[in-house]
Amino acid sequence: MIASFMPSVARGDIMAPPSKSMAHRYMIAAALSDGKSRIDNISYSEDILATIDCIRAIGATVNEYEDHIEVIGRGISAGGKVKFCCRECGSTLRFFVPIAMMLGTEATLVGSKTLLSRPMSVYEEIAAKQNIEYCKDEAGIHVKGKLCAGKYEVPGNISSQFITGLLFVLPLLDGDSTIRLIPPVDSRSYIELTLKALKLYGIEAYFVNELELHVSGNQQYRCADVTVEGDFSNAAFLDVFNTIGGEVKVGGLSADSTQGDRVYKEYFKKLLEGKPTLDISNCPDLGPVLMAVAAMNNGGIFTGTRRLAMKESDRGRAMCEELGKLGIESRMDEDEIEIMKGELVPPSETLNGWNDHRIVMAVATLLSRIGGSVDDAQAVNKSFPDYYDRIRRLGIEVSVRE
Image (cartoon, rainbow, N blue to C red; front, top):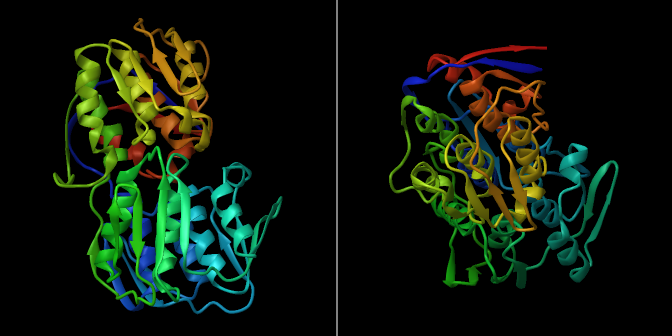
């Protein structure tokens, strides 16, 4: 699909979409409980649908309504071979590998080719140490074995998703466990989100110090009714119009949220004031939109960009290439990207969306100012399925076609 934009200005009030990160965590915790939980403020993005598929695979019943879901958990009641359909969602895949490892039966996790190419070395090493069968081929990731409580060491600079995956299952095992994070630690805020979700569902896990988590064993999840807070990651793609002359008020964001991407407001301000150096190691999902703001203003230097290559696309390279088509020069090193100050020019061709929701939305922001088209427009369904409807309501002139 192709989205075509005419230069236009966004104005109006709009609510932030619900946090995908929190929704994943609440749904999995509810599925591991014994009883019915209600989760309000749900948006049925492709990633959320992937997690719904997977919690059904472990025996949970999910009733879907317009703005909430009911999850009737039965602990883990899957029997025989289990198949987890993760679609293109990295969070779902990495959250469910440890669940697959504790089943004691054969499990296969399937997803897109891009998803299955993401680094999984943390789980590969755990499986080898505990004699759990683990192999990956074109059909997916195949796991058979039984995870044990104990001491785990996890690199802190790969992805917090591995730590969250372990935090879901370690409370259910016989015996206490510790997770030691090997510094440096990126995306710590996402670990805090997981601990918050676990606490709401009756699970005790906590930081003993900056680098060590304690998880008591033999615990039980308790069902709970919760509301998903607004998502700072996608709110940034609405608030961004204020950096290019728009007048948009984004509601539904919690002032005391622990989401790491809440830093976008501070970073936007710095990009409007000058050419700052911004560390995005704890908020890699903001990389594309921050680079778009830099391109439309004073430029910027972004550090901690190494992990951008491990997303739906190589986001650093993707943004540099697309910005080049708009007349903006850039410099890309292993863990740093510089966006030069320049003058945006309308593209002479349809820009590439890289089949990546955050690249498409970042490019869309640029095109709303100068006009033009971007392909892979449907990629927004991964996290923000009503994105185009929302920005139209704000006055952005966009049409989407096959």
